[in-house]
Each structure stands twice: as structure tokens, then as C-alpha cells.
Image (cartoon, rainbow, N blue to C red; front, side, top):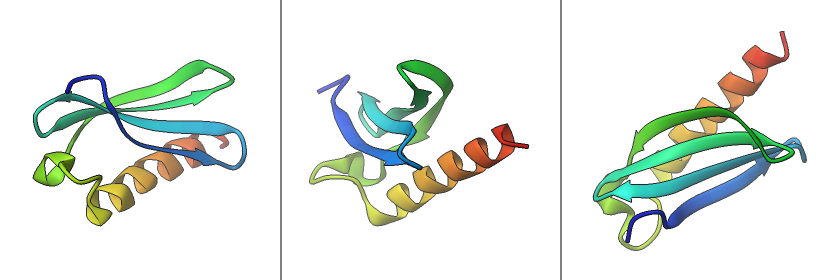
Length: 74
């Protein structure tokens, strides 16, 4: 069960955002560009993402990625 990709997305055709399960109800969000990890942080998995990620989790992960990337560009 651990190290399973729960969700992934590409932002601005440049940044890969991936949430990987690390333990029950826990995951790790990574933001990378061209294979280089730029940011890594622990995140929660609502309902253990048993049937896929919860919409609220996805929204939160998107916000983390957008804020991180916007901050990098200033």
C-alpha cells in the first residue's frame, strides 16, 4: 500500500505534482521540474484515499503547488 501514487498533475506544462501514499492516511506531495524535486512535504489523505483522493484534498494540494510555484517565480 505504501509508495502508491494517489494523485498526480502537471502545472503550466512544466511542473509535475505527485502525491504518494507513505502510510495509512498520510502521503507525501512532491513538486518537480525536469526530474528535479523542488519541494517535498507531508500531507494527509482524507478517508485514506481508499477510492481515490477526496476533492478537498486535491484542492488543497493544488493550492500548495500554485503557491509554491508562484513564490519561486518572484
